[in-house]
Image (cartoon, rainbow, N blue to C red; front, top):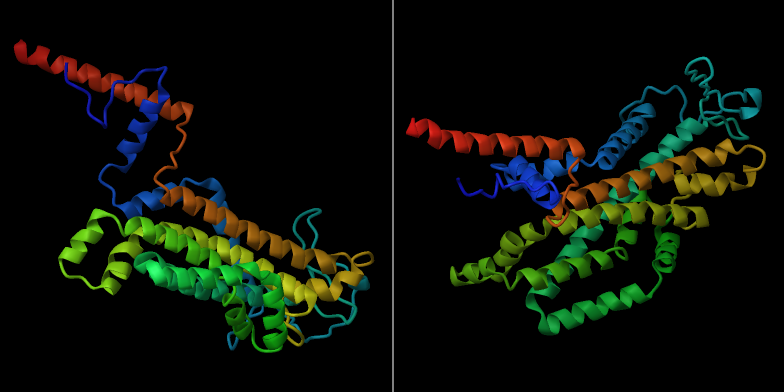
Length: 355
């Protein structure tokens, strides 16, 4: 009888680990690393649902009231003051079918459309989140790569500076920077907050570089005459991209909460512009009488943060080779039938040749 190969092992019904390994190997056979990561990510239902919801939120916020010179399809803007209808109550209704009405999220005490305000706040909060995530990731990669690759005095200097930034509460540094540039554009505020949000990324990248710099492919690159910069960013960095992408998403989730907290305290984006935290701060006194003014900004903050966290979980499972998908009962049965069929074919082949 033919010896089993790694892709078609003998199946023991009481040892499902072998079956799961066979299923995993069979499904990724012949695929590139990028295709394998994409396949694993697509199978993470929570991440896919979160990505769909986040895409819907982004499209709704950018197309409804427009962005910059691009007009939107919603009739009201954040400066319009239409007459207050029905005490400003939301006109959105699901009884007897979906009814949007004139002001689906309601109106404030001046008559402003809350839907337009929430969409504008979502735009600004998303802008701050993305800028903080990108800038903090770049700073963290640069400092972490230098620290982990060169070690010694460079490592001590950069990590002691990182420790100094970590010991100071981020919310306090953010409040100081927010009070300093809060009246400026959201982009300027995001840059200022990114300057204190890179520490966790730097430590993670440093750890990855400390481990990867001892691998054989780095020694081969040195022997080939590659410079330190080429080894760092051409050879080591691509092997650490999984950790970087996953933690970038988590960094963005914490960034939107940081901006929300600062705007709520009055140190973030201020009037005449709005953000989701700024709206919660402005309407917190109306929670008892007109709770919809408080609910909608809070709902969008929670939705965005949860979606990004779920996407980060999906990316972590996709990039981490130690994460193994648990095979379902149907998949196990299908693998067992395939193995039995292959075993029968292998046994029948010699008999046919002898006949």
